[in-house]
Amino acid sequence: MTDTASDRQQTYAKVLELIAPFNKKGVAITEATRFAQDLEWDSLTVLDFVANIEDEFDVIISMNMQAEIETVGQLVDALQRLTAARA
Amino acid sequence: MPDLFSKFDPLIAQREALLETGLTDPFNLVMEKVESPTVAICNGRRTILLGTYNYMGMTFDPDVVAAGKQALDEFGSGTTGSRVLNGTYAGHKAVEQALRDFYAMDHAMVFSTGYQANLGVISTIAGKDDYIVLDIDSHASIYDGCKMGDAQIVPFRHNDIEALEKRLKRIPPDAGKLVVLEGVYSMLGDVAPLKEMVAISKANGAMVLVDEAHSMGFIGEHGRGVAEAQGVIDDVDFIVGTFSKSVGTVGGFCVSNHPKFEILRLVCRPYVFTASLPPSVVATAATSVRKLMDSADKRAHLWENSKRLHAGLRQLGFQLGTDEPQSAIIAVIMPDLETGAAMWEALLDEGLYVNLARPPATPAGMTLLRCSLCALHSEEQVGEILGMFAAAGRATGCIS
Image 1 (tube, rainbow over the protein chains, first blue to last red):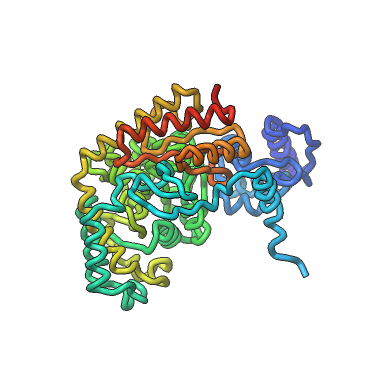
Image 2: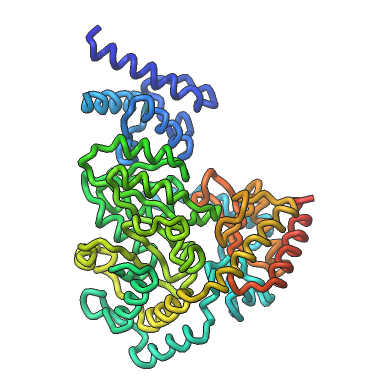
């Protein structure tokens, strides 16, 4: 496993951990899980979740970026890009 | 062929279900006659108005009405043009001067509505690669201004000072930053901690815009708003306001001390590409703004009304949006839309009009009965209002 791949695994694991408290319906999460349709999050839940993600990874995920992120996998990819850009 | 209206089906169904129960449509009320800032005839019945933004009761002020009539006679019914072409009359310059005097600021720019003032200023000054940091409960006109521009939009939890600071610190230091706040948030009637938020914004290199739509004329020693009341007005870069609330007519504005502010008149599309306000409207606005400078007694009476209604509703057992009265808005929290609509209708039957507010306008999916007081509500009227709430609340089971 390359460093990038293990990095990505770690990011994914962290994202899963942060989704858990908001996953009220106990939906089984995969990279393909969609936040709006599958998890049925409202805007306030999204705000709280994004705030937790931002605090954990020390990044900003603007609403413009959020509009492009539909699935868990896309969020992990975006976090990989954001943390790489900062390093 | 796909019907473009299919997307509205859930809302159409919700509305039909609500009206099938026999309720009056809360979003279709007609005022047949308006007697004063606090009384109108609705469905043939004399109704106390507790759901207007006529905070300072200026709509029937004799000087204001006379100024409008005179302008109609002297300048006609409309300008038929943009502010930058044939739509700037003496009255438009006069109302901008009145605003500069009212706020003691160098520049004032008048838009055709408050919505357009937010839309125009926000979308124009924050461009690509800039950041807008805003409270999640911001008004639709602020969000639409963000959407119309190209900046990165970063929301933070309502009135959360620490959340604002964290976000500001993560934005690249060399990026342009605009923090957008409101003095009074209109759904719950709560005020922003502007003292702390403005200081944090400045410390992190951001410009600050405060929408004082719901505080003008009432809050602060000179009625300049929450930024004045909290002692930070000199650090606010832009104040956006409206003529459609305390001023009592229609129109929007932005005031500022920024030395380059006037260039906005050429680059701000919602200012340029629309017709200017009619002469009668700017004449009433200018007269009203000048009278508001000198309304300390009315401000004091409005605070009395707000305190008394808040305490009375709480005593009756209603759940309110704020623990103490913070503005002229008192929001009564309803358990759900059905109960809210039933209570709204029961109040109307009693002869009281309030606003029924529901998502997406409200935060956290709440249904609210929004009461907004007027400086011209008499003590007796506030007593009557409390009696109507007691009767309607018991009839609908909202209180015991």
